[in-house]
Image (tube, rainbow, N blue to C red; front, side, top):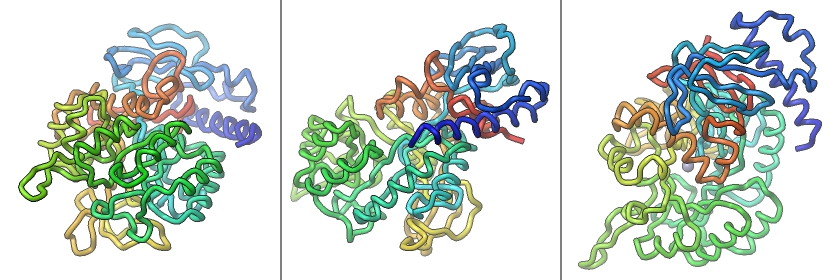
Length: 436
Ligand SMILES: [Zn+2]
């Protein structure tokens, strides 16, 4: 994106932030008389006070977070005086780092595969209303030309994204997968890693930040090493790998297990012998990180508790893996693109195939993931928040600027109650959502 777009985006964000604060009655209108995106306006400090600050390493009751130029400049355990600042009273609620979703296919009725800027923007806005401040739009297996088209749309959308969760790069989910574990992935595209193909793709774009494959496939270790050399995170998913494969895969760069339990083997038997699958391998290799679809549907309470007990808050990233129906009422929807997708039904908080024999995608939002870990898996709020903020930031190597409320980081901030009902979402210092 160019600097002109940057400036325009910044300007629109300032306007939207201003309208919220004015609407809340905290500021006289004259404070925004000259809203022109100039340096003086960008220097306006914002003070969020009277909240329970989850840094999220610790909890500061009655704390304050101060923002300037889109960054956090101060965090305190008291109500500190900031002369001239815009003041936002958190009214005793939680002040938390924004949630980072590593794995999301759409929401608000839109899929990133729809191939339109509108789909990206509307999905990002819906998720922001539910606590996501940064996301990795995820594309499932498809053709190369379709991918290049999608990357173009991503860039256009990114330049116009003023009211949604920030796009942090794309996650390619496939197509170098195990046919047996492909799940909802289109079998026509499943294949072994093809060096000519992936090298060409990565030479044409720097938007891809994460790529998923099955490490037992021929060429998959070389693939992971190549990804690493390009700064792309390699994750293992839709895989039939057993422990011996996973250990070698881990040594070659596969550091994250995609949606643990889904699209991977458990204990399997070949003749008389039992083998540990991807699930047990992820537990056994201490340093391996795991993704969890914590919608309370894909995994029941005992498994959520088991994962938390075994891996802990610094190895678990809560992800929505949500399809287009996230944030929409129950009823009919489409899994995949509008053009090539399949009809599904959304009910009971999850998408199902029309004959109800199988789930057909998650409709979760990040607030729900955190709420589920607290209510269903008995996880303390501080840890549930970590799994949605600093842990995913660490996994993607963006923890220098995202994932916690500490001075110097981007001002991605939420205010929510103890039921994780979002009251306010701030992205890079700009309020993109306030509950009415
Ligand atoms: Zn997915």
